[in-house]
Image 1 (cartoon, rainbow, N blue to C red):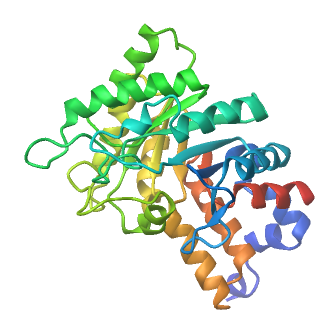
Image 2 (cartoon, rainbow, N blue to C red; image 1 turned 180 degrees about the vertical axis):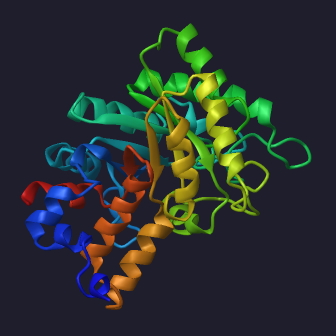
Image 3 (tube, helix red, strand yellow; image 1 turned 60 degrees about the horizontal axis):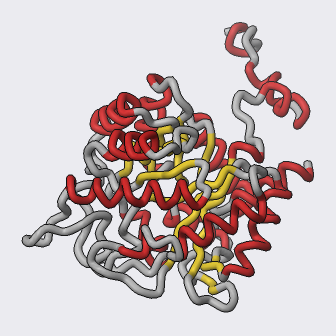
Length: 329
């Protein structure tokens, strides 16, 4: 009975004060570990709010420049760029046009913030195609993996030429990392890195993103994005990307796939990142707007959980806000 009334082991000692909790914290957030996804809309004269993502906008080129400097001043690690073109076609021609919105935005980013931020470019066709799929379609309307790889190689060269530090293939085509690495190396872009969307799932949490990029998608992407039921497959995909030369591997979405993230982090010999996607952002913002959760605490808790599971860095729409809060502590 005395052992029950007077326990010898008291873990609560290490939770007793804010200073003690801070001292023994196992996982910490730092601005340099946060990456801001950004949308740049072709032809926009000013920033356009995204209704399903309160606080996030489709940037005009002018608002984009200002936001880049804000991000650099906050000390975040980088920005991940998505283009929103005015014109779409079957093969996503705008993705490889030097004057296409994503390539223009990439050049601007390098000119405005140089090497103060790591400039990452989404390497996928879905924003640029009139069918909204991440690749070239065959006559039956299915995504043709190998024809798509040709377009990805062309995109990689366009983005590297525009100044991307990292190209980020997100289409989940088989062999995409190897093809892109070969194209970059053969054309003198050996220092351009590859951020591989390695374990990317066919998730319901992408809904707001499709508004953000004006997606033309009909149907779904389940023949190339992964089945949410599969854990081992996520590790297999990441292992293949590592073998093909990925410089960084990523799990997307983050919060519903922390087990996959932990699996990948346990075996990867390169950095492992995670993408806190639009639906995750929208859920917290919506619940907070209704007074159901403490917004600021929920944001930090979700990011801490992703880092705790093994992410070395996190793509999040709260990157600048959180970095500023961390710097102000």
